[in-house]
Length: 259
Image (cartoon, rainbow, N blue to C red; front, side):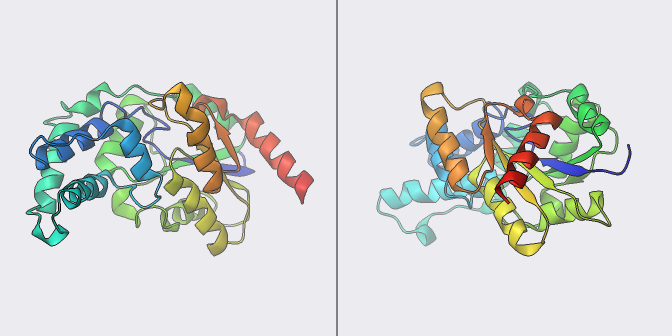
């Protein structure tokens, strides 16, 4: 590829793969298990939690929903016998399973190899910044999408979003010298807040592109998109495939027209 004229980084969950029946199912299973079968969160309740912008990590999100359930029953958090490591083990048994036999094997892909090749052909560098574990992220990127040596910042590599360190690190790896526009494609409030925070930290052109994930029902999609815009999204799209090199050029053109 010639010298990149822009770079685009993608979140993975809800953007590259549909996790409504995997990560989110594991989260709901975990909450149900540790509330002794009394409470199982709905997709909307999980969305509402993530709209708060600080629950990008699904282990933490599971723990928070468990605590909130017991608080509603009149208990204080310190009274809840909840071991975080045990919670993580239960979650991962459901999600990953033995030899990738868990819910992860049933995740529909939302893009394919050709999608990324179009960005390369347009001289747009690309990579991934995700709160997923490295093993989980590499499973979908390398084994399922057949991407060779993708640029990836995973959970183990940087603080969780909306801290912008991971996104900034990816940018500096992709563009060691120079200054090009940076796009981040994400599906949560935390993703868009990450772009806003990166904009404050590094003086370049940052654009948050929101994607409404597949699990959101038609009646709820406008409200979901409004949440992403309120969190800082430059534009919101119905699917990741709607975001193409031509669309990025249009966003840059509109931005230049406003300057």
